[in-house]
Length: 325
Image (cartoon, rainbow, N blue to C red; front, side, top):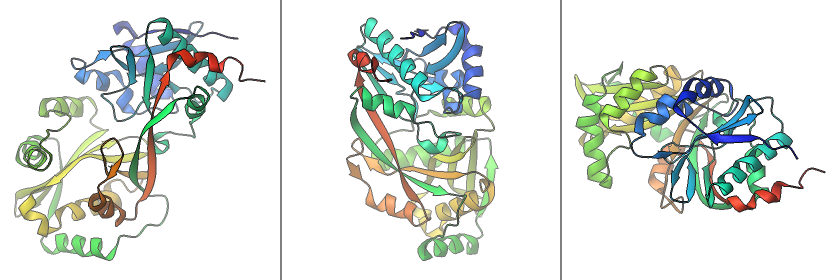
């Protein structure tokens, strides 16, 4: 059985890592080291590189907490990243090598939040099969509301009425690079009032990321009579546009600002993308569904896609020993 060389990421691997990410079939800009390291002070990096002799064939964006490795707690999704030419038997052996490396380094378990299939260039679910073979436990499942822009879709009557309301109120949408007004006047106050939380990204963090990834992180504000009433920060990958943050002034909901904004993004700005990902409507690690939020997204014509979270014991690497016959 072929063994692959696995080692921890080091700072001198920066360019090699990013070059590999740029050509992998199941990666987005979130796996670029510049993105991963904006919050390096919060996480103990434990990213892995997998080599076939001297050739890099896979990477695992990851962090470590005690005896568990996560891929990755600071990212929306993660998993083993590999090239398009690799076939299932090879990927099974790669995954075995990763588990064996972790086991030998006193790591008890590996947690993966699988990258949703719409973000991949081509079908890339080989690791899902490896997780089944290694008896991984599904411990969380979120429901994503996704609009397929490659097929005909219809907004509900209620959504159309809200969009017309925005038009009749003369709302104006502007793409801007200054995120501070939205962050300080709308987003932070709303999150604190509704959920007693703050944005995952601080204002300095999101400003830094926007400068590093200007084509991948775009921001749009909505104005009513020159007053800011709503906005959204969009994460843009090759196939998908995803509102990472969206919020409007509570007393201005009657303007139809959020519906007007989504309509503009879907039908104009990102109409050539394959998918528009509205994100999840779950709480309590997927065990509760915010019905009102889910319904609102559904009225734009969305369908459900699942994001799965698995935990695998590293000692189960041996379960991949005799799979190939």
